[in-house]
Image 1 (tube, rainbow, N blue to C red):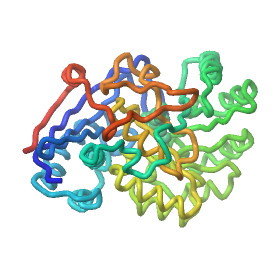
Image 2 (cartoon, protein in one colour; image 1 turned 90 degrees about the vertical axis):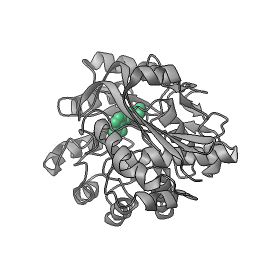
Image 3 (cartoon, helix red, strand yellow; image 1 turned 180 degrees about the horizontal axis):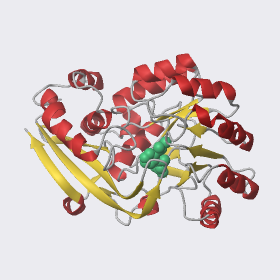
Image 4 (cartoon, rainbow, N blue to C red; image 1 turned 180 degrees about the vertical axis):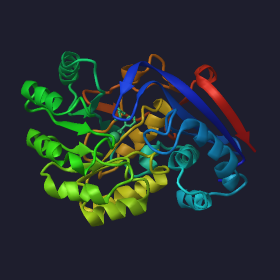
Length: 368
Ligand code: OSB
Ligand code: MG
């Protein structure tokens, strides 16, 4: 596929209520959307680094600039036959994984659309339906949290993820476990801790959690390996896994028992596939994380979650959970308790609603 034009949009999508994590409190999500055109065909990609470099070093304004000034010129006019061709063309630019992902994801959507097949099938997935979990941010009160967990349980969610940060930790988990002793639960620390917090993690180890997600620094592997050696509960790496090499190093160090794969965080589906296969060969199961993308970005995550080594309910949520209006069309809905189903396609089967793209847009660029 020869790349003839690249449109880039930075959007700010208002949330229905603030999402609080260890790294920030947000009331809107910044995302970049890319449309890759080849002849009359096109594909869409979305990556959500957010408005500030607090989850990783990337942020929306910089992501649009690096796609416009450095990445898009590397592929414009080139004939890209594979995701590897695309990644090789982008390789001179260091880091900038979310920015690279916006192009890689658009390339995969374009490829699947040209083949007339849904993306999950092109990737070799098990089927269109994937298992998803419920996620709850830091709340104002424990009562509110327990009420929301009860609602998620009643809705049939098969697992629950709790955001975890200083001030919202052991006594919160203890209250949740007292009320819901058998629920499959894990916590996500978003890199808020260090090895000095080992005594806290040793106490947390007693709560029979499914995993502890990214307890230590966003770019660490070695300390995670030291922590994992002291805990029964598996560590899950999220922020730390940004390349295939990092995944290989994490496995060699025994730094984790699970890998959360976000197609945006690792530079796109091409790299995500390689990480998936590496983990599968090593017997390390994976699941799919998200950044509160619109239905466009989540459609890529659904397709990826269909792969065989995705073994835990993914962070893919129905639109109504976070957004009054989804930028993408159609929106994401549950197709059954704790599950969502990919659109029949072709490609991801979803694209931005043009009026909402105009309304949510804060910056735009065209490379051709
Ligand atoms: O660390 O997994 C994370 C959301 C935004 C940024 C980072 C993370 C998250 C989530 C996912 O926890 C929540 C969801 O998609 O339901
Ligand atoms: Mg996480």
